[in-house]
Length: 72
Image (tube, rainbow, N blue to C red; front, side, top):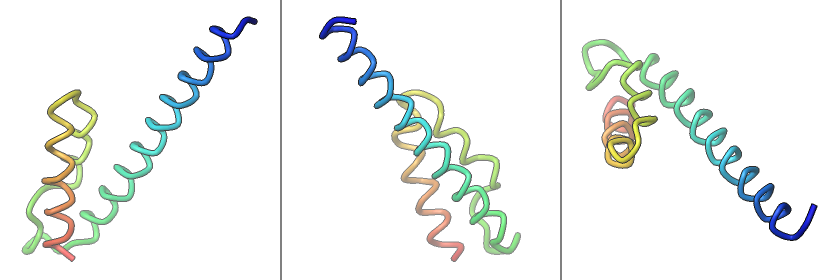
């Protein structure tokens, strides 16, 4: 394995690690919204998974965070 192979492996680890962190964050946000009362809740807990949509998710994550903050 040459130098370029090592760089490719490091990029793969970096991308998979970032994706794992994103999924953990989404699970936490989903559980947090699930704990909020239906009367106060701004969005359904399942809507947090829309963050996985490329480009749209970059904006949606701020909406999710705001909804969780307002509920708590």
